[in-house]
Length: 67
Image 1 (cartoon, rainbow, N blue to C red):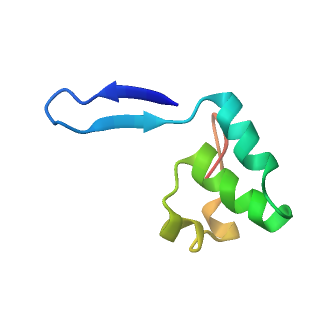
Image 2: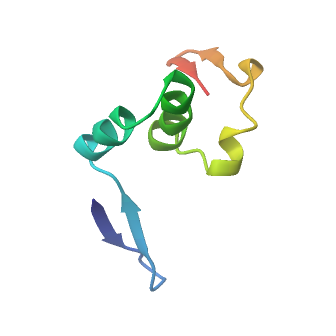
């Protein structure tokens, strides 16, 4: 787990290492759960945002496909 102090707040920024993300995704029980976990871990969506993702949210841009 990575921790970094905010510049102007007492809270810490926290994010998983790539190894931890891989382990987290491997723990998924099925494909649907793995996709939901990946939306949080790789796209940065919050839990309530994962439930609202729709195919129209996926767009092609100059830098590639984005959510």
